[in-house]
Image (tube, rainbow, N blue to C red; front, side, top):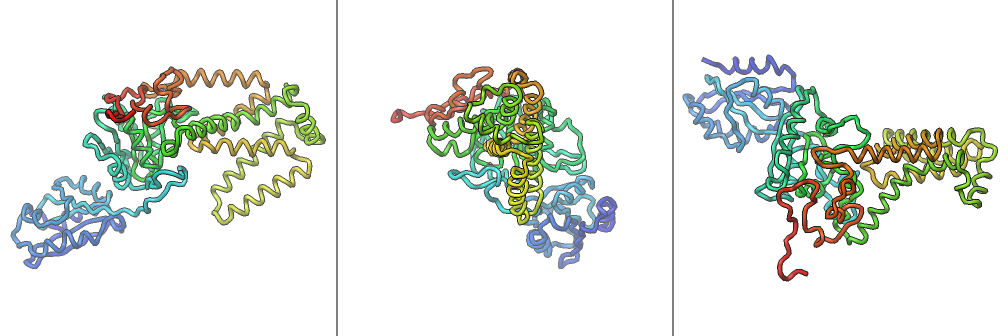
Length: 479
């Protein structure tokens, strides 16, 4: 006969941590029970209300079926393998042992500590929804279900990580998502063996065909409305437990120049803002390199009046133009990193020190010129108009600066040609990263650099190969 003590000992021999608690109780007729759960991630109040109270009336000779009928929890699962029970306890559920029975019940009592749903800090919009994803996968899936009530919505959850057993949910719409795409992505994730998956950035490297590429290979979003819109176009969404950043695959570079607010304002304003972002990123990457190459190799391209101003500013400086620009960019990166890591109350003082002491004082001391500081500051501001590409664009700015300072404008032009040739040949899951420009897909151009009105975008993007291509059906009264 299997006793409670034997079952409890089998669990505690594996889960020996002190926060794994055992609650033993018995019914009014003497039937003994034991609930094992992890403190902090299981709801003890629900354990009392849905499990302990109903079992007070159990007869002493009652079997498992009679006990199960009295349990008030909507999540009750039969189990006979102790290993499965241990996994469930680690996941936040409770295991209920019945005296004299080998089999046991798994009770759904998950209540991990989570923060409230709020506006994400990286994707703020003046118009549109304010909700953002949080670190709980169930809450995030609920936010998706809230917006996509279709019976075609499919959610498949897998466990990733040998030690962490992190829940990773694949979200797609059956009938729209290309056939076989979710299975391909799932295989890429499952085939990677790793101990712990703390964030979605790990998964993004798993599914990338070239994880060492300088460019992103997955779309990212912290807003459910953006996530749902991408899924409805034929993409597969990936939500990772413990991460507020959801992934979407396949990915195109042009989508990072789009904003959620573009779809809540007029198409004319949206187009203007997108062109502004593209121009800003080009300026942010190229401006320091062009300034250095013009000074060192092609000074005649600088207008004469501006050249006089620059000459008066740089005269007497002990550093060459290349070293000066490198030093200024290096100081900017140090200040940026320090302001992120420091407490927010110290960050303001750091900004004052960086602007006044390192900036103004360096100019007055004749170490750095005023044009160099203006160019570096403006370049940094331009790059942050597209925050999702800052990692890539910052690296490109350094590369262009090295090449332009060494070879000149010719080297910068050759490097641009190399980047374009590289991106044209790149694709993930059959979708080119430079689509809809390379290859040219005319119908998809209406939601790329420009943003057409809603009635023009009646079809889903062709590049994803969605099975259901119609997104908007006009009735007879619409023009």
